[in-house]
Length: 240
Image 1: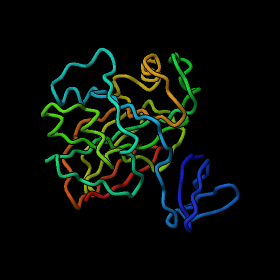
Image 2: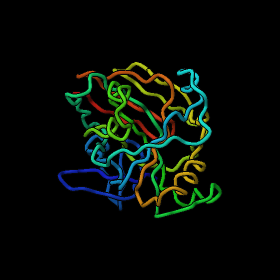
Image 3: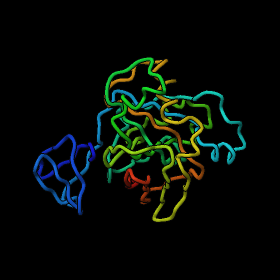
C-alpha cells in the first residue's frame, strides 16, 4: 500500500492506493502507472533537513561524526514531484544533487520518544536535497542555498518500510554516483523524530530529509538525476 497524489485525465487523486502489475488500484479504480502523472506525495508545512548523517559521508569529507543532529530548514515552495524539472537558477554557479531517504509525519506531535516514533510516521519517500554548493561554501545560510524553487524533488509516493537497512543509490544520466545503505545513518529515524520534536512541533505531512551518503556532485542542464531506495521507489527528475 502506498500513499500519494497523482493526476489522471486532468483529475487529481489523493490517498492510499495499491501498486500491482504496472497498475494503480485506487478506491476500486484501476489506472496504468504510465498513464498517470505523480504529484509531490504530500504538501508539507516544513521540511527539516539533516546534515552530515552518514558515517561513510563523514569519512569521505574527513570530518568528525556529529554528536547530535545538525538541522536546517527548506522552504515548502521548493517542492516538486517525480519527473518534474529541477531548474538551475542564474545566481549559483554549481548546483549539486543529494539523494536521501525522507520521512513523512502522519500527525501532529511534540516531545515524542524514540519508542513511540513509529506512531507518528506516515511512511517514507525518495528525496533529492538539491543544493547551491558554491553559495553554501561562500557562507550563505543553508536554509537559502537549499530552498531555491524546484530544489526539493520528492516522490513518487510514500510507503511503509523498515528504514534501518535500505540500499540507497543516485543515478546521474544512468550512472550510479551514490551507493550506500541507511544502516550507515549516524542518527536513525526514531532518534531524529525524538530530537526534532523536542525542538519544534511536527505537523501532519511535514518531511524530514535524513541526510545524504557520499558521492554528491554537480548537475548541469540536460541531466537526468534519479534517486532509488530499496523498497521505497525511484524518483526521476530532469535538469534545465
